[in-house]
Amino acid sequence: MLEVHGLDVYRGDVQILWSVSLTAGEGKITALLGPNAAGKTTLLLAVTGLLRPSRGSISLCGQTIHTERVHKIVEMGISMVPEGRRVFPEMSILENLELGAYTRKARRLKRQTLEEVFSIFPVLKNRSRQMAGTLSGGERQMLATARALMSRPRVLLIDELSLGLAPLIMNRIAETIRQINGTMGLTIFMVEQNVPMTLEMANYGYILENGRIAGEGPAGALLEDERVKSAYLGIGGDS
Image (cartoon, rainbow, N blue to C red; front, side, top):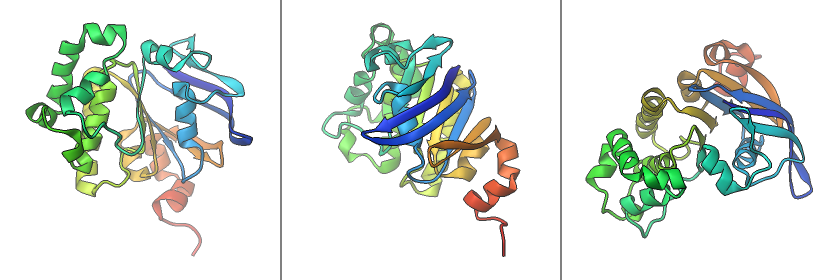
């Protein structure tokens, strides 16, 4: 499991996260929800080693990771799908995927992993020689997700899965995330603004506001929480 305890993180001189603690249970989908500028992406960057916490700890299956370098954290089992469907547009789908298999273990099992990834994303297999820059937004999201799987992670971090996607495409990709969780047994930690979609997918959720954990609970309970309904679902509240 992924555990964050008492995390403070700065970006420059500005403190973004304040004593954040949370757990992403093994084999579960855990959601981190909140408005823009709440600090959600900052937390992901800290988990991946791209930002160093000034206080607190991050561990994966009991092993400390927040003191490790980025490449070592990937080798330990953390992989991230960044916000914005980032792919290499002038490279083919296959070349993008192969870039994800850069750890020693991933290189050794690259052919097997490609088969697994293509079984989840058959559209990518059928068009593996196509340039990534010609893909639609939804297809780029699929490719970015598939590339993250190529390192054979234990924990998959996903930053703003639904951003800029049409509802139909968003629902298809959400179903694929459920499939990845179910068939591959991956622990998934999602950062997202689309609260209804995410809580329907997740087992457990946290609310991050102004850099602090403002609430948590089983996903179903959060969907029924009056404060969550009012603040994030546009339901209820004072008239």
